[in-house]
Image (cartoon, rainbow, N blue to C red; front, side, top):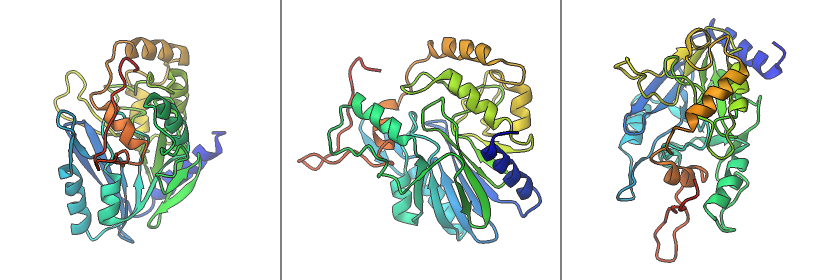
Length: 306
């Protein structure tokens, strides 16, 4: 294993397997097929919330907080203190509730530094004016590949895993890895790579990097769509299971084979239902665009662009 950051992630996983385990509670939002994870340290009651969901009705333009309030209720009943609000990337399928969580619970809002690339690309697509900052300042902290941090006393490391988008991150916290959209359950496969800034070849290399972690590393996913023949939703697997059984990228699938499959499959996929509002909000750290002179925020709909 020559990658120093993966070596360090593997060390964290191995050390955590001999320590008091973290507590992980996951909340599934069936409307967007999204999983929000709360990981907490039982020794300190410190916690991180990963990939939160704001309820949003595109027909009416109304947002609400039922999904977020379930997480808040769990946090408060457990006496937990939120240290981190972690985003794995600027999601295209749901809106982040991070500002709402920060208002209610505190915590440092963080994402990968390559959010600047996403802001630049989509700032042009949505023709954002000069008031839209493209420097990541909407977030409290920007992670670089290999940055170390802690949740309470639990060691953690941030890994840059681009391909689905330029800014995807995995957070290895103790013996668990929160991998966003990079991989799905073994029977469903892998993330698409056709959004602006995505790349199938880069995605393959990021996945193989993740799959060089110890086989026992638990992988916590951001989505599940129930593969054909499976009747229940699932969002936890392991490095070993993905290497053996992932229908797109198991051991033995070459980079060229994966790229050919991924590009052909992506060409058949429609855009996610919430991509246009999601990106505009998520590239702002979960905030709506600034209100116009009538006090109302507006989300744009670029015609014949995506």
